[in-house]
Amino acid sequence: MLINFLLSLLFTLSHAIPLHTPNRTAPTLTSTSVASFSKGTWLENLVIRQSDGNALVTILSAPEIYLISTSNEFAPIKVATFPNALGCLGIVELRHDIFYVVVGNWSASTGLSTPGSYSIWEIDMKERSPKTSKVADLPESGFLNGMTILNPALGVLLISDSYYEAVWSVNVYTGDVAVAVNDTTMATVPGASPALGINGVHLIGGDLYYSNTNKATFNKIPIDIHTGKATGPAEILLQSTTREIFPDDFAIDLYGNVWMASDLYGELDLLIGAASGAGTVTLDIVAGSRNDKSNTGWTSAQFGTRKEDVERGSLYVTTNGGPLNYIYQNWTAGGMLIRLDTVELGLY
Ligand SMILES: *[C@@H]1O[C@H](CO)[C@@H](O)[C@H](O)[C@H]1NC(C)=O
Ligand SMILES: *[C@@H]1O[C@H](CO)[C@@H](O)[C@H](O)[C@H]1NC(C)=O
Ligand SMILES: *[C@@H]1O[C@H](CO)[C@@H](O)[C@H](O)[C@H]1NC(C)=O
Ligand SMILES: *[C@@H]1O[C@H](CO)[C@@H](O)[C@H](O)[C@H]1NC(C)=O
Image 1 (cartoon, rainbow, N blue to C red):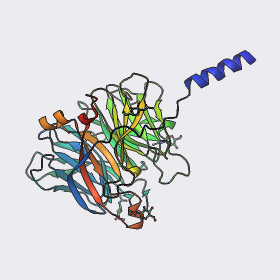
Image 2 (spheres, protein in one colour; image 1 turned 135 degrees about the vertical axis):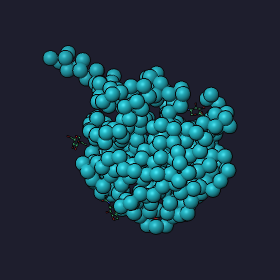
Image 3 (cartoon, protein in one colour; image 1 turned 180 degrees about the vertical axis):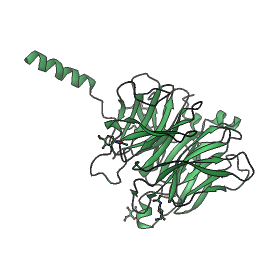
């Protein structure tokens, strides 16, 4: 009896996830401004366009999408707006110049979502003037946030629900909607404000990686690439605290390192090896500063694809100008698209 108890205690202890305290002595990458918007413009998410390496950026403070040149060739162009919505969130490019985006009502001034207000829209950028059309409504969703492609051939997308501890699947060809995964690692922390559980989602092979803002975690779960259903248990790869990190969306590099935007703190968290299967994960703060009021509120990150971008390891980061400032309307900066050249760290 006692032996059994001791053995199970030992098992629990050896499997406990260590609490990660970030290394803040790591070198800080320089931020270069690519585009700046007016105060109160919240840049939320982005995708790098396959055809030309420019960025398609979603705005959360207005139901709008902008095309931003990553080589300073033109000023930002508004390419789409959506009716009956406060803003846009996750975005992907499923086929050349066919994009899908989350549209719905999350209010930056209250930090609250209107459950049931979300829909998925297509943006067809093949023509000179882009065309938009609705793919599906998700009346049972709580707060749709990040988006990733599950299966390009089947046209299935996965979308995180930051309120209802789940990932939804949407088939863009049939309009079918289903709950793909529901797991406690995706839940909010009761009483946390704002309520934000699972946030960014990205699929690599058969593993779905995701951040959880309230729990200050980075996680993965194996899934079936046809249905999106879990094929095994979720794993917490990194556990920190919301005093140290504020996980928003992220990018995964070719080596399985994770570059995660730490929204409230205006910092970039580097999780070396988090998506490499190596088992050990380190946490470094590699860019941004909590004291910088001119460049703050980092929401998501994606690697550039032009030749210069690949050489520099350019990571494009969207910012909102500080999430708290939307409540008090006391911004000191607008949202921006910034570039960080990750080769400066000497990792590659
Ligand atoms: C923190 O990062 C610095 C710079 O990369 C490195 O020299 C140092 O060894 C790290 N400290 C720990 C405790 O990992
Ligand atoms: C979203 O909010 C706007 C402004 O309050 C409102 O007009 C619209 O009907 C809402 N949309 C949905 C789908 O609830
Ligand atoms: C996921 O499960 C939880 C706990 O049972 C439930 O509260 C939540 O509504 C579920 N989410 C969805 C989208 O069905
Ligand atoms: C705006 O006001 C809030 C509440 O007083 C404060 O937390 C925040 O730091 C202020 N923003 C700036 C940019 O000073």
